[in-house]
Image (cartoon, rainbow, N blue to C red):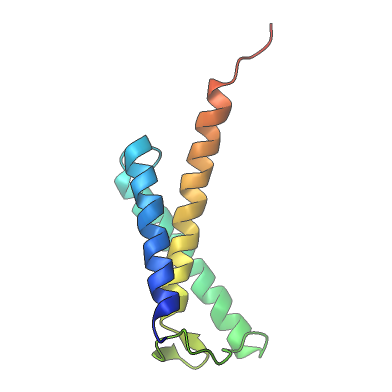
Length: 108
């Protein structure tokens, strides 16, 4: 089913966004910083991908789950969406971990 992978990424990102907003982890507290971090991280990983593609390390495999839209050779449309999701997920997980650790009692 073409587009299933992109749909899975978008639905997963929506779930993380709901958790982030509900628990006020990172996005609602610092929206500009969150967008900047996701943007910079995504750009970093896209450069990393470009280096891997140019050296022949990264190649796009065939899959019926992809839309079939390539932004560049071996760079499907889903890749930057996934990288942005990965960066956002890392931020939310970090903020959640910090919250959990801050609520633990410190022994005397």
